[in-house]
Picture 1 (cartoon, one colour):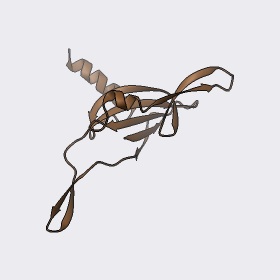
Picture 2 (tube, one colour):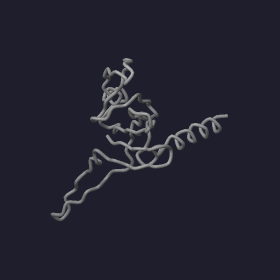
Picture 3 (tube, one colour):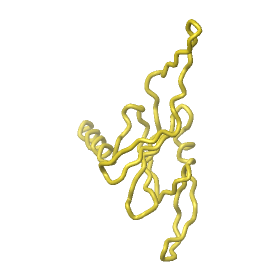
Picture 4 (cartoon, one colour):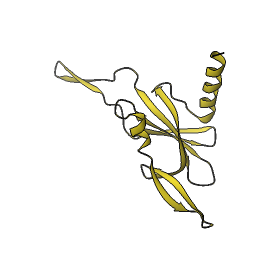
Length: 130
């Protein structure tokens, strides 16, 4: 699993929580680590709690999680706003979110890098299907 943090639409920093699960090959008593091809990821966009509307792009390795198992990692919780209104939020890895949205399954080197990138992909997909 991993998280791409975005602040606004332009600032992007990547925080990897878990690295690839490499294959280790022993050759002449030397360990060689081989990362096999591209891995597929379930990608979610989640809006952080707060007024800034900051978003994280959270991904889960498709080899380890089904879409449903990945969605279940966002645990619902009940909260109260500053003005006393109840709300349901979601928590993942200690971070609280207003909401989360499944963007799809992507190869690790082809994941959307921002909201703008994701929207551009949707527009291009719609244009090419006409």
